[in-house]
Length: 431
Image (tube, rainbow, N blue to C red; front, side, top):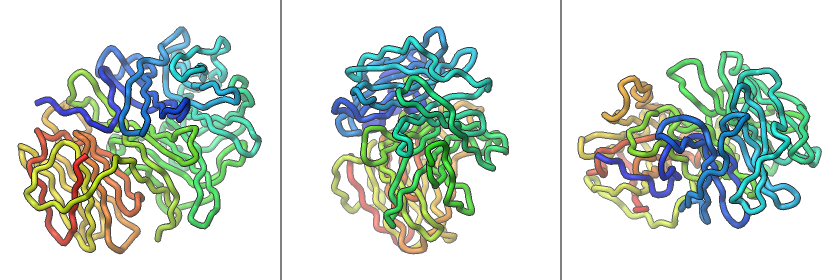
């Protein structure tokens, strides 16, 4: 059985993709780049694949923007517009050592690498990658956050060509032996009007059961480095599942919009000719919760009208559900082989999910360990849950986006019926 291609999640025409790179609004378009192996549907020699959109929903693949060169293959990075209206890509050249390089474009389509590459040579460490460039409002210049082993290093530049190191950020978690990747630093306004900076980090955990996860920290970027000022009791996760990784925000926008790689730890995937997708675009905000200040996410969707749906209804490959419940409930989506995915609210005020393993996954895939998730709410009132199903991509949001969970669900055919137990109002819109 062939799995249908998602309609609104960016996927490559062929080959492999992973981390989103260079997210930027420029030349009247939303641009995304992604790590890409054009030769095979598995991870391989990295290129940058380029796509554009008018609305963050319908994507056009442009082609390959960056090819491997004598410095190495093209690892992750970011994009900004300089003062002269030139799009600048900053990326990691992954060769004998990892070094930071730049490329330029006057039209957002054709890119020329700098003759001065690398602009930040390797400082003598094996893991030194994924530069995220952002505007330094303290000094009025550019800063870059770079993943450097178990810390984030910060660099500063006036021209995107000449850089100096200014500081570093590490955590207690990092001393447990985790590797940092794909950092990002951006500002958000809290409900009280105060401006906070948020540092996000993707982490490769040594423990197999933890997989690859994303954490965030709330504080202040002081010009040279990030300082955490909000100290929660628990580590703050950007995602509650295992299938989202390497998320970064868009440059060139007033609001913070974020996308991630959606197939981080469940590969290899049972797809033909291509592998990987990115999440839907998500708007980020800060919200006061009973546990304190937290990051919340709202996904961007096409206009739709929600209508009541009855138990036993069959659903197509693309739809969105809205579930409102005052008390525990259990919802089940069934495909041609029966029970495939469950989600609900249990008696301990936890949102939970469970999904059946696809028979097409490799026998040694960690997917089986990560079939279920539980997340304890800080809210105690009614739960409003949004479930977006776009072919095999599922994204779930709850409690105003404090709960965000992207996961893979490989249906055997379309969903034959939806059922639920408990007092819940369930509505559906076809996408």
